[in-house]
Image: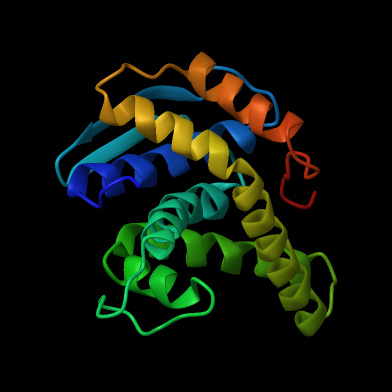
Length: 183
Protein backbone atom coordinates (compact mmCIF):
# COMPACT_ATOMS: atom_id res chain seq x y z
CA UNK A 1 0.00 0.00 0.00
CA UNK A 2 1.28 3.46 -0.92
CA UNK A 3 2.08 5.49 2.19
CA UNK A 4 0.25 8.76 2.72
CA UNK A 5 2.77 11.58 2.43
CA UNK A 6 2.32 15.13 1.27
CA UNK A 7 4.00 14.15 -2.01
CA UNK A 8 1.74 11.14 -2.67
CA UNK A 9 -1.37 13.21 -1.94
CA UNK A 10 -0.23 16.21 -4.01
CA UNK A 11 0.75 13.96 -6.92
CA UNK A 12 -2.75 12.48 -7.05
CA UNK A 13 -4.34 15.91 -6.81
CA UNK A 14 -2.32 17.28 -9.74
CA UNK A 15 -2.67 14.05 -11.73
CA UNK A 16 -6.45 14.42 -11.33
CA UNK A 17 -6.35 17.91 -12.81
CA UNK A 18 -4.08 16.78 -15.68
CA UNK A 19 -6.18 13.74 -16.57
CA UNK A 20 -9.36 15.83 -16.45
CA UNK A 21 -7.90 18.56 -18.66
CA UNK A 22 -7.07 15.97 -21.30
CA UNK A 23 -10.27 13.96 -20.89
CA UNK A 24 -12.44 17.08 -21.19
CA UNK A 25 -10.46 18.67 -24.04
CA UNK A 26 -12.63 17.19 -26.83
CA UNK A 27 -9.49 15.95 -28.58
CA UNK A 28 -7.76 19.33 -28.72
CA UNK A 29 -3.99 19.16 -28.37
CA UNK A 30 -1.69 21.58 -26.60
CA UNK A 31 -3.87 21.55 -23.49
CA UNK A 32 -1.19 20.81 -20.88
CA UNK A 33 1.87 23.05 -20.72
CA UNK A 34 3.50 21.78 -17.51
CA UNK A 35 2.85 19.68 -14.42
CA UNK A 36 4.86 20.36 -11.28
CA UNK A 37 4.76 18.51 -7.98
CA UNK A 38 6.78 19.01 -4.83
CA UNK A 39 6.27 18.46 -1.13
CA UNK A 40 2.98 20.16 -0.35
CA UNK A 41 2.64 22.03 -3.61
CA UNK A 42 1.88 21.36 -7.20
CA UNK A 43 0.31 22.82 -10.31
CA UNK A 44 -1.00 21.84 -13.69
CA UNK A 45 -0.56 24.63 -16.20
CA UNK A 46 -3.08 24.05 -18.93
CA UNK A 47 -4.98 25.89 -21.58
CA UNK A 48 -8.53 26.68 -20.52
CA UNK A 49 -11.20 24.34 -21.86
CA UNK A 50 -14.33 26.54 -22.13
CA UNK A 51 -17.22 25.24 -20.04
CA UNK A 52 -15.06 22.60 -18.38
CA UNK A 53 -13.53 24.57 -15.48
CA UNK A 54 -15.86 22.82 -13.03
CA UNK A 55 -14.80 19.34 -14.19
CA UNK A 56 -11.08 20.11 -14.12
CA UNK A 57 -11.39 21.86 -10.74
CA UNK A 58 -13.30 18.93 -9.24
CA UNK A 59 -10.85 16.29 -10.50
CA UNK A 60 -7.88 17.37 -8.32
CA UNK A 61 -9.72 17.32 -4.98
CA UNK A 62 -11.65 14.23 -6.10
CA UNK A 63 -8.41 12.32 -6.79
CA UNK A 64 -6.90 13.47 -3.51
CA UNK A 65 -10.05 12.41 -1.62
CA UNK A 66 -10.21 9.09 -3.49
CA UNK A 67 -6.64 8.29 -2.43
CA UNK A 68 -7.22 9.34 1.19
CA UNK A 69 -10.53 7.47 1.38
CA UNK A 70 -8.85 4.33 0.05
CA UNK A 71 -6.35 4.63 2.92
CA UNK A 72 -8.90 5.63 5.56
CA UNK A 73 -8.46 4.27 9.04
CA UNK A 74 -10.37 4.93 12.30
CA UNK A 75 -9.20 8.10 13.97
CA UNK A 76 -8.62 10.06 10.76
CA UNK A 77 -9.87 13.65 10.60
CA UNK A 78 -13.18 12.75 8.97
CA UNK A 79 -15.99 10.60 10.27
CA UNK A 80 -16.39 6.96 9.34
CA UNK A 81 -17.75 7.41 5.82
CA UNK A 82 -19.42 4.69 3.79
CA UNK A 83 -18.70 6.81 0.72
CA UNK A 84 -16.06 9.40 0.13
CA UNK A 85 -18.27 12.50 0.29
CA UNK A 86 -17.00 13.45 3.75
CA UNK A 87 -13.40 13.15 2.61
CA UNK A 88 -14.11 15.22 -0.52
CA UNK A 89 -15.78 17.88 1.63
CA UNK A 90 -12.68 17.99 3.87
CA UNK A 91 -10.34 18.26 0.88
CA UNK A 92 -12.44 21.02 -0.71
CA UNK A 93 -12.39 22.93 2.59
CA UNK A 94 -8.59 23.08 2.22
CA UNK A 95 -8.69 23.95 -1.50
CA UNK A 96 -10.83 27.10 -1.79
CA UNK A 97 -9.65 28.01 -5.30
CA UNK A 98 -10.67 24.59 -6.65
CA UNK A 99 -13.97 24.78 -4.81
CA UNK A 100 -14.73 28.25 -6.15
CA UNK A 101 -13.90 27.23 -9.74
CA UNK A 102 -16.00 24.08 -9.40
CA UNK A 103 -19.11 25.68 -7.89
CA UNK A 104 -18.85 28.90 -9.88
CA UNK A 105 -18.75 27.10 -13.21
CA UNK A 106 -21.65 24.80 -12.24
CA UNK A 107 -23.69 27.92 -11.37
CA UNK A 108 -22.80 29.37 -14.79
CA UNK A 109 -24.06 26.15 -16.43
CA UNK A 110 -27.32 26.39 -14.50
CA UNK A 111 -27.69 30.05 -15.50
CA UNK A 112 -26.97 29.19 -19.15
CA UNK A 113 -29.60 26.46 -19.20
CA UNK A 114 -32.23 28.68 -17.57
CA UNK A 115 -31.25 31.51 -19.94
CA UNK A 116 -31.86 29.11 -22.82
CA UNK A 117 -35.41 28.62 -21.52
CA UNK A 118 -35.09 25.56 -19.28
CA UNK A 119 -37.10 25.56 -16.06
CA UNK A 120 -34.87 26.36 -13.04
CA UNK A 121 -35.50 23.02 -11.29
CA UNK A 122 -34.88 21.11 -14.52
CA UNK A 123 -31.66 23.08 -15.10
CA UNK A 124 -30.47 22.30 -11.57
CA UNK A 125 -31.28 18.61 -12.08
CA UNK A 126 -29.46 18.58 -15.44
CA UNK A 127 -26.34 20.12 -13.90
CA UNK A 128 -26.45 17.68 -10.97
CA UNK A 129 -26.71 14.80 -13.46
CA UNK A 130 -23.76 16.19 -15.43
CA UNK A 131 -21.77 16.33 -12.17
CA UNK A 132 -22.68 12.73 -11.23
CA UNK A 133 -21.79 11.49 -14.71
CA UNK A 134 -18.39 13.13 -14.40
CA UNK A 135 -17.68 11.58 -10.99
CA UNK A 136 -18.52 8.19 -12.53
CA UNK A 137 -16.10 8.97 -15.36
CA UNK A 138 -13.42 9.98 -12.83
CA UNK A 139 -13.78 6.57 -11.20
CA UNK A 140 -13.15 4.99 -14.62
CA UNK A 141 -10.14 7.31 -15.02
CA UNK A 142 -8.73 6.41 -11.59
CA UNK A 143 -6.11 4.02 -13.10
CA UNK A 144 -4.87 6.86 -15.34
CA UNK A 145 -4.70 9.22 -12.37
CA UNK A 146 -2.77 6.63 -10.36
CA UNK A 147 -0.34 6.05 -13.25
CA UNK A 148 0.35 9.77 -13.75
CA UNK A 149 0.73 10.27 -9.98
CA UNK A 150 3.27 7.43 -9.79
CA UNK A 151 5.34 9.07 -12.54
CA UNK A 152 5.17 12.45 -10.80
CA UNK A 153 6.27 10.90 -7.50
CA UNK A 154 9.29 9.39 -9.28
CA UNK A 155 10.18 12.83 -10.65
CA UNK A 156 9.43 11.91 -14.25
CA UNK A 157 8.55 14.80 -16.55
CA UNK A 158 4.99 14.02 -17.62
CA UNK A 159 4.00 15.31 -21.03
CA UNK A 160 0.55 15.74 -22.49
CA UNK A 161 1.22 12.68 -24.67
CA UNK A 162 1.80 10.54 -21.59
CA UNK A 163 -1.44 11.81 -20.03
CA UNK A 164 -3.35 11.19 -23.29
CA UNK A 165 -2.03 7.62 -23.45
CA UNK A 166 -3.05 6.97 -19.84
CA UNK A 167 -6.53 8.40 -20.45
CA UNK A 168 -6.91 6.30 -23.61
CA UNK A 169 -5.85 3.16 -21.75
CA UNK A 170 -8.29 3.85 -18.90
CA UNK A 171 -11.18 4.41 -21.33
CA UNK A 172 -10.35 1.28 -23.31
CA UNK A 173 -10.40 -0.75 -20.08
CA UNK A 174 -13.83 0.47 -18.91
CA UNK A 175 -17.33 1.09 -20.17
CA UNK A 176 -17.62 4.88 -19.70
CA UNK A 177 -16.63 7.02 -22.64
CA UNK A 178 -15.16 10.51 -22.44
CA UNK A 179 -17.73 12.88 -20.97
CA UNK A 180 -18.14 16.46 -22.12
CA UNK A 181 -20.43 19.16 -20.87
CA UNK A 182 -23.88 19.56 -22.37
CA UNK A 183 -23.98 21.66 -25.52
